[in-house]
Length: 285
Ligand code: R5P
Image (cartoon, rainbow, N blue to C red; front, side, top):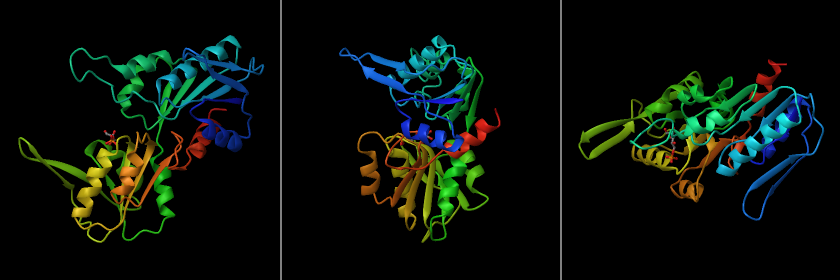
């Protein structure tokens, strides 16, 4: 088996290659003067099984992924396994307002492989849109393992909303007190968000979510925690989308550390999903 590293998942590809002791295929990427994307696999990989690793964080990431898969087909590779560590567009997984597309369905339908892996996809309903066999892997336990090595004061792990509560609870509740933020509607225009049950006074808080994008969810949660007397606040996520100046705003709001996995390669990507991926792949071969 060989690894084809996508342009958005270069370090992760190397980590997986080291762990499995399998080589990375030489590939060239370029952008034409008009902005069109081009790639070319520079090795003869006919008959070889390949693992393509490419997150979809931008439109061009998707184009490159589709191009790589097509190039693999043209080279008559063996099995094509595609790992999409971050699957963008998953939040448009249904029609919220009349006239909208289901973008996640559009994208998922384009990706054809013998097996596809996603990681903490925003909504599991998106898995039904793939036309190829797909599995979603859960990286939350890796984040929990990471915090086990951090010295914290009487920590509480907090899911910022009821949507992420189950996944965070399953990963963390054997080791830490767990709570989630509950929204209570006071009047038609007033919503109070507060910890569901625990007194967080004087305790360190670990906010865990599938992704941090604009940071709004974490900032609101952190504000409530502070108002409830929490001590240090850490923000952990699987996917560090972290648009524009989000990281800076999180630090400015007093978040002590922002830690994520490497499904998207950012400065916060201190926890690698490579061990989880390699364990999974070993069961396939
Ligand atoms: C929401 O359902 C997700 O789990 C995240 O909480 C959300 O996508 C984070 O977005 P933002 O950082 O923009 O608040």
